[in-house]
Length: 154
Length: 205
Figure (cartoon, chains in turn orange, red):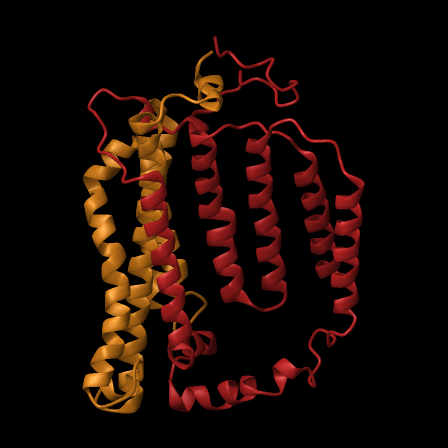
């Protein structure tokens, strides 16, 4: 376990909050600078993957259980599509955010915020889900393969 | 000048990638390749694309490739003999692709098709119609909202596909070491060298 390595542990503990903060900045500052939901989602997931690499997948699962990341995966797409449906119900066209707010501009602003959040949620939980699946698979269902045995058998 | 240097680096990396047989090094090099691509996009003023390339191409896909290596093997299987037909096919395809680029407009040409259609409208009107100062965000999230919905669905589908093919990840048993640290991430210095002839380093009884 890499958790024994003091340097890695300390540096990871320093970095992870900063990475999460940067992800939030990229998420909510996407309309002003480069970035948006997609990049933010990936960066957010990277913080958790770094945590899982240093402290083990078992600890990471206690922070975000696999069931939660699977549900958030669907929730993100639902938020995006739901925004379109709400726009329909407000009398606009599908994904026409203009009708969501008091003025067209405020509606656009709100709509972009919400759908970017949906994108970020889906991307982050997709990355975390895929990582959990890859990392949790190894000895759980498949016996040792050649490569693995070479890597740790000597 | 920087563009040419970066493209040169990318070409060198690509050839090196083809040459290497140690898949661990291949994964690392493809991350480096993505990083060069990201730098290229920054030079061409496409910061949003560069951002994505750096985060996805150089960052997370490298991690996933390492994860895949931990599930399979870190060494390429023995190569088949190169066939003349394949070589001819590759050269013909490459030639056609290069021939195709001769018709492309010069980089930054004001009369290029891409600069004549909707791009101008986005630049002139997006501040009044959508709002955000970052036009890329307006285009992605509002003008092309359907496309982005589709992209989100693609990411969703990718994760669902992995879940279906590899299966749901199981909660780790208490005492399992392997579960908490995938093999590729545990790679040690005393790994067998990649140049070994296939099979000789295989400790299978």
